Image (tube, rainbow, N blue to C red; front, side, top):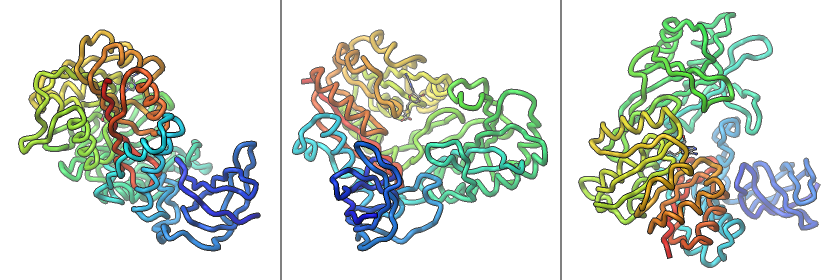
Length: 445
Ligand SMILES: C[S@@+](CC[C@H](N)C(=O)[O-])C[C@H]1O[C@@H](n2cnc3c(N)ncnc32)[C@H](O)[C@@H]1O
C-alpha cells in the first residue's frame, strides 16, 4: 500500500496518478487532487492499476454520490462536479492532440475550445440500451452489461435517461418476465427511445428470427409503458449489423424527434444522437464550420456548395446542410439508416443524393466537392480514407468524432496531407461519463 496524489482523469473510468517509483497508476473512483492510500491490484511493466483504500485528503472536485450503482450504466465520473468533468474532458482532447496527433502543446491549448456543457447533467439521454437474459434460476433479467463484459447487471432505473424512461428497466422487467412465464421468448436486447419534444416513445425488442407471440408481447409492453411504437428487430445476437427485418407490433414502427425545427424519423436499428439538445450544438458547429450560419429561418449561407456527408446516419447533418443551400451527397452503410435518410430528406423538403455503401469506397466517385463532413464510428477513419479525401481536395472538412484518440490520429494524417486543423470544439453529450464529442474543422492549405 502507498499514498498517491491523483493528477488527472484518464480517458476512461479511472483517474491517473504516479506511484513512488514513478510508474503511472490508474485508480478507480479517483478524482484530480485526491491524496489517497491505494492498493495495487494489477502490475504491468508500463503501468499499474490500484483501488482506493482510504482518502487522506479528498479532492475539492468531489461531489456526494448520487447512487451506488452509477458505474453499472457508465456514469463512472458521477463523483466529480460537473465543472470538473468539463475541464477533464477538454484536458483529454488536448492530451490526445499532443500525444497522438503530434501537435505541440501551445497550439493544442489554443485550438481546443472549452467543452460546451450539456443543458441537462442528468436525465439527458433519449435512449436506453438494455441487455436481456436469464439469471441462473431462469428468471428474466434486464439491465446493463458490466463494462467490458457480457455479464448483465440488473438495474431498476437509469437516471441518465429522460424521466419518462428512466424507470423503464424495472417496468419492462416486471411485465416481460410475467408475460414470458417459463417460456423463453429469446429477447436479448431492448432499446427504448423517448423524445421530450414529440413525446413519442418506442420500445424495440431484439430477438432471433422465428416464432414469436407478437400480439401478446405488444400488449404486455403497452401495459408497462405508454409507447407510441413497439417493434421487433430480427437479428442474431452479436450481429447487430445484419438486420433481417423490423416488424411493427404496435403503433408507428418508427420514432420521431425534432432537432432545430427539423423532423427526423429513426427506425429502431438506426443510429440517432442520444442527447438531442446537444446534437443541435453539433449541427450548428458543422454548419458554421463549413462557412454557413444559423439564421432566424434556420441554416443558411451554403448556396451552390457541393458537400459530401460521409457516415451520414439518418441525415442529422445532411438535412441542415441542404436547408442551408448546399447540394448534398450523403453516404451511409446501414440499410435502415439509408431508408431513414431518404424519408427525412422528403419530410424536410430537401433533395439529397443518398448513396448506400461504404464511405471510403464511394468517395472517389462523388467528384469535385467543395466541403466534406465525416462522422465515423469510434474507430475513426479507416486506413487510406484521409488520403482519398485529400485527393478529392475539398477546401474544408468538418470532422465530428466520439473518440479523441482516433480523431487525433486522423488529425495528424490530415496535417500530413496538406490540411490544417483550425478549430476543435469539444461538446458534452454524455455527462457523468468519460465520453466526449469533438467537432473539428480542417482547412486546405
Ligand atoms: C456516429 S454515427 C453518425 C451518424 C450521423 N452523422 C448522425 O450524426 O446522426 C456513424 C454512422 O456511420 C455509419 N457507418 C459505419 N461504417 C460506415 C462505413 N464504412 N461507410 C459508411 N457509413 C458507415 C453507421 O451506420 C452510422 O450511421
